[in-house]
Image (cartoon, rainbow, N blue to C red):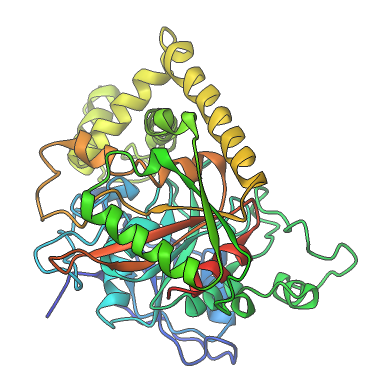
Length: 439
C-alpha cells in the first residue's frame, strides 16, 4: 500500500563506512539535498533544486547512510496533520483513515511503514513528536543549538530544530549521535556544557569521552528517576489518552522511578504565544518567495505589487497564506507591542516555569498529544482545532528544551498514544534513558 510518504523518491548513495552504513534514512523535504529537489511541500518550490547539502545531510552521508528520498510534509511545516502539502496528504500506516500527524508526517509514515529504517524531521512546535505519537514511533526534538540548521528552509528560526524519527529509542539516539554537534556555518549551534573544552575532535568523540553517548544512554535504567507531571498538560486531554499516559507512568514507577505533580501556570498561555511568534517569523521568512528569486515567474506588466501578490496567491496554500497574514498583522506598527512583545514576555515566563520545575525533577512527562490521531479532513475546516492540538508540544520549543515522544500504548480503538518526556537544556541523555524504559 502507498502512504504517500515521499514527495521525491531519488536515492542518494554514500560510499563511506560508518555507523549508518547499513541504514536508509529518509529526509524531510525542507532539508536541502544537492541535486535533488526540495519543495517544502509547496507549489512555490515545486521545481527548486538546491546547489548544496544541508549539514545534517553531509553528516548522514559521512556516516554511510543511504537516503531513499524526500518525505512529504505540511506546506512549509505549517500544520499538524500532513494534509496541507501541495503533493497530497500522507496516510497513517498505524491507523487507517487517520492522519499521521505533522508537519513531519511523511518521515514518520516512512518509518512506520518500513519504507525507511530511520528518518529526519523538523520540529517547530511539535512536528517531530506529534507524528511520532500518531504513528507509534519514537521522535526526538533536540535542545535548540544541538543540531545545525544550515540548509534547513525554516518556518520559524528561533523555534525550529531538526530531529530523528525511529522505531526505537536506541535507534533514534544513534541517529542523533550522527547529526548533533557544532557547525561553523550555523552560529546558533554550540557545544553541550559537558563537552570537553580541551578537545577539538568531533562532537561524537567528545560525548563518548565524557561518558554521555546518546546511544549508550538508552539502557532503560530509571531507578531513582524523579518525574514531574505538569497538571496543565493533562487538563482537557482525551480521557483514553490520559488513561494510557498513567499506565505508562505506572510502568516507569514499577521500574524504580517516582513522580510528583507540578503546576506551571504559564502553560495556559503557551499556545497563543507560540503561534504569534511562529507566524511572525514565518511572515518574515517567506517574504523571499516573490517570483523573482523563488516561485513561479510571472509575466510582468509594469505593476510589481500586483505581480508579487499573484505569485504568492498561486504558489502558497491556504494555511500558509493564513499564517503569513496573521504574522504580518502581529508585527505591524500598531500591534507589535500588543501581540508580538507580549508573546515574547510569555515565552520568557514559560522558560522560567520549566527551569523551576526541572530543579525538582529529572524529567517532566505528559501525553505527547492531547488527542489520538484525527480522522483525515477533520481539522482542515477548523484551523483552531489544529492549533490547540499542539498545546503539549509547543511549550518545549518556546523554552528551547529537548523532548522525546515514545509509544505509551493504544486507545480501545487501537489508536497510538505517545508519552512525552522533557529534559533540561542539553539533557538528551536523561530523556533517552527514561524513554528507553518504554521503547
